[in-house]
Image: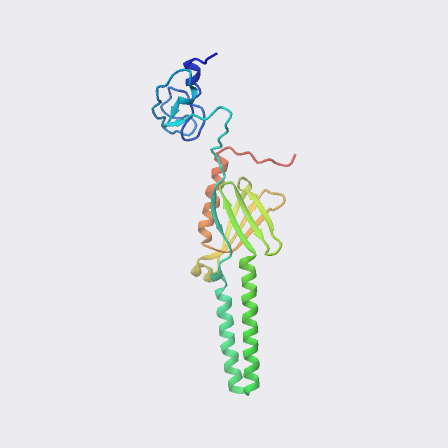
Length: 225
């Protein structure tokens, strides 16, 4: 039996969030979007009742307005290791001056070998730190990926975040790098550390804003029963 026009109009949906709204509403009571003009169509065709010029979704289609979206991704910054390289360079110059002044050719060659070996060692250490860590922030979670050959991923629900601590040395402030410590109520990962990331103040603000966002949306953290 065909549905009446009144029942069909009751199935109108908001063009912005996809939730059901009253056909006489000028604004969506869920998201506040303005309702657009509806097209007059035959009463026996529910697919032709439009809001915003698009077919209304069927009642069994679930649209999640709180979809998880990427916010930021990064890894330790190469420039964060500049102070170590400055110290290495200064020590190398000092050793070469001492070796050339008080030693012979064999001593100078030995110093060059030491300088080259220490430089390679520092580069390998920094490369392992940079490429073995990757951070990914979404509107709901924070991911920390560790490892190169074997990868371990930790994730933290933003709704569990209690506090964020930012630490920077004087050189970090000049280079705009630093560390972030995120404290949470998660029993597995109570603290997650983002090491030597670029622009830590911006990342801390993104975590704060999105943590407040998931809490305002009424998300519920499932605690241990």
